[in-house]
Image (cartoon, rainbow, N blue to C red; front, side):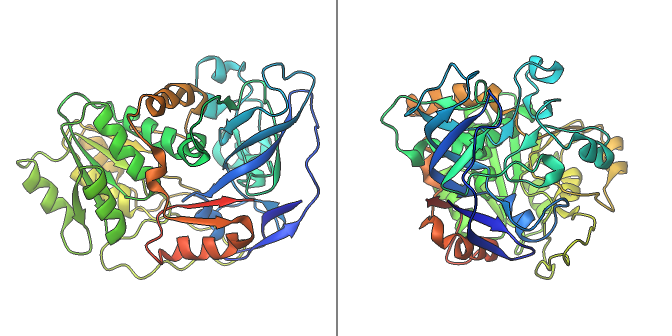
Length: 387
């Protein structure tokens, strides 16, 4: 089959690879009908994530049709249409039983490597390094889905793939980021980063009762989308001092809730363009966005970090975090907790997630899609591909 594979920094290729096979009775094989490039895929593309090996199949946002199931997958049958969560969870370990699905204790076959790096292993992810399982991803014609008896969301509706695809990651991730911000009715919520997760965080903040949403970025098309389509007030950090602007907008208090939807590759005003690490080079991630967020948040406020970090962060403003009595919640998304409720918001017409798509490509053009998305060219916000 054809699949997009990683071969090093800025080197992704469409290769012929072996078709996936059932390896466990709880597996399913999915024929991919839609897949997307996620902002966190760019951390792999730019060489930030350890544990990548040449030939690894990329992609963790995908959906498709069931073509085969293992003997212990009674909930799915051939022909079922499913959206697959990017986190892989067993459904019954200590953490899954507490609905902390992205912390699953059983799904990462390389848990010892992750524990060495982080102290404990989180759940495995599709297409996201051997540190997090080495599980082949969904930017491919077919994909093996472990724990298919608890993972995929079966959909029986006339909604298009484009309306449903982002239930696999960025819509639940944006929602959990707003949920983790503990938004109370009328709160002012500031969101750093107007990429795909930031856009869903804006809409989620409104649905959770925010009184104001202020979105911060420097890319014009992302700010236009946040302001024109989502009703957020916007700040271009290349043109305006964010701290001074937020204090002025909030009578000197600062925002009640702040969300870092940027992560490892954050830039600040005047920063040079990002230069990726050399192959196999490990280096600290950027603290720019999270430090500005800590500085701006009102005393006693709540911080939420859905932005992906892949290594240590030098210069983190722990002093301000502590002295301002700020609370912080982080984490990969507990997908199984959110997928069904958020599907209902689509059914009720509260949101059409396809608003985020700017580029549609065949899988054969995936390398060009990565290049365009990474360089933020051609007003690119979200790339969807069909095998």
